[in-house]
Image (cartoon, rainbow, N blue to C red; front, top):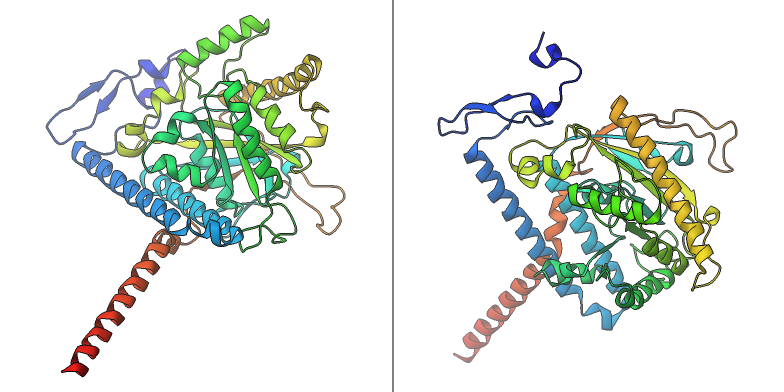
Length: 442
């Protein structure tokens, strides 16, 4: 019997010592607290190499992607259809980069399931990849467990072919980060100062563009100009990820509102999501909701303290599994205000709707903490939808974050490479012409 199996049931993960691996300097002993993902898999030297490799790859891709954006920016004054197609292409490149970072430096098992509302929209391909069949336009909401949550949601967009159409609401401070900030501005991301008086007009501007944009081109949707452009708007109603500090803030807010706080999620804030749905009204039919859980986080602990950047990407200790539970809600079923300036009663009705969804998330996450998995729909429709046929639930899908084809990585460098070839060709032609002219004169 192993040491872990022999422990009494009341023992906690934190109290179990584990051996510290030899880190290449003759250091060994016992660790005070084990890690849910097991022992450190890489010594100091390998960790340093992984750090350098990941930094080099990140910088190379960010500079290349931003250079690609700059090369395409003149298209805005030439032809806006070409411009928005080009920027969607560069966003796809960033999505590919996100997948490579996860696939190469923090590979882990992904378990996907959902309820009957997403029946027929989750599938596993013959080579083991996830394929989702979500619509071109949606608003996506999720609980916020870790800083890396958005990486997995962008990968979900990739599995639907929508990784060039992701839009995220971010902190305004990120806009001023060199290379990254300007790149995100090209992507049309929405920056928030967490000051509603200041944020409302800029949100209105960006959301109106998302609600009205119609362009022609290969990345402009199924009907190419006859319908609105694809859009996956990603929102975290909690506003920040779960941690010790944010847990205290959530408890204070719950006390102020006279409601009970949660254990596994933070209380959601409804203002931003409500405003987005109002501005996008009539252009989006569905809200897709994802409940995320990471394997190995003990009750009362916080993922950000366990799955740090170092442990996840450099020590080789990512979560043993990332678990996602999907469901969707028709926007038409949500109590949205009928006017742009909602009454207190209308705002409260929407807040209660959102709070009810988060109570359901709390139940789902409590079930995960108890059973180690989410529920899964494996039922079958009694009657198929017209033109679709019978749909069956996917049950549990176990997969991993990976590209469909290895050569997709090369797409990241395609535009700068083509420009370099064109410039080199023009230079060579110019040199040859000059030599020919000089030879003629002599």
